Length: 494
Image 1 (cartoon, rainbow, N blue to C red):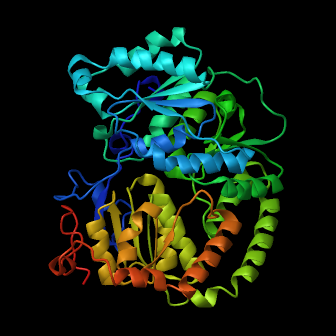
Image 2 (image 1 turned 180 degrees about the vertical axis):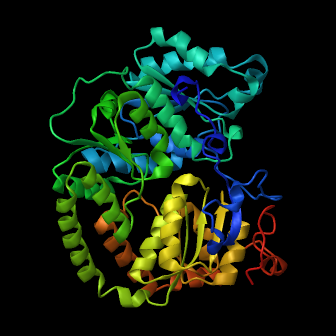
Image 3 (image 1 turned 90 degrees about the vertical axis):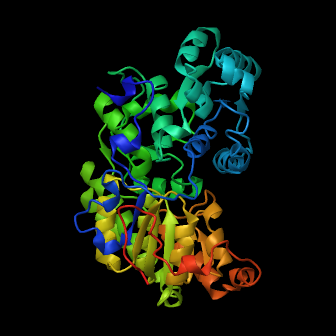
């Protein structure tokens, strides 16, 4: 049975046997099946985590002419205030209009928890439709309705005839999964069940060769432009889904000749559905960050359309121009040690790029692990060697601080809200993802190198911070194995 026949997607722990707890040397990946995938693998102590509601909101708020209605406590979704900067800049980069996302909350109270929140949700849906007249309303179930048993899908079905907007129930009950990447499945699940056409739909198919370029918050507009440039050199028409894509245009996903992933962690759930229901094949092998990865990504697409020879010529020219541009920068990177931390594919592909630039990769932390990253670990082992730590962790800054103290990297690349530990230790930090900066393709490789060159040329800022700020860990912790609380891991890195 297709997952899309269910009211909500399965947990990634069940669907992909994904895991969040592993710590050992990279070389321990001898069988490509990590220790953390064994049953009952977990931490005896966990410091924090990420709720899947956060990444889901980042995508939903980007959809034009939509309202995100959160059914839950008033604090749920407060991250929208910070994430709105990305919505505003994304709209500005694409259409020259600064526009906020629109999100509301049912603000469930203690009384609602006792008596049930379904009437309040129905009223909120009708009010949002009348006030904003959106094309779609994402009706988002957070933890509270999941705990008290509110039937969000039932309310949506009951209210839909009374409103003009299409209602998309999205299940983001944070207590149901420890793998916050399940958020991407939840959003795609809602889109696939509500905004895509019935099977057999072929109207609107464009002549020529058309591809779905999938972007589930994998990149900003500047990176979309880079990939569009490369694909258009192959004379392919490009549709980008789902961020900042008009809801009425979503059905075009079902009419493309090929779907192309830009991040397998984000895209596999929808791409399998498009193939199963609409016979749209897909490619999901590489993330186009780094020189080798970009070439492999483009070559795979070209081979599908019988354009392999043309792609080889493009790649050869692009790599030659990039090598010339990088030549004056690379001497700065020789001997410099780098640690990367991000979602699995971004962390691995960025580590590979850093090795291509001449850095010594000395540590990798990925937020979770599943089978799609096996090919990236093989590349990393081939390019960088095996004798440095790999940490699979949904945050856990105490493990990160321990590793950084032992390794002492010259630069740390992590998400902007996750760089503080390294910064307080005096390590130069650089953001590994920002929708306004280049990371993807050949342009992204050059721009990242250029930014790192400038930062490493004058790394004193974080050094000054470390003189006045201390982390809350005792010296005894830094002397211990950073992975001591992972039940199936061990080994002394000292």
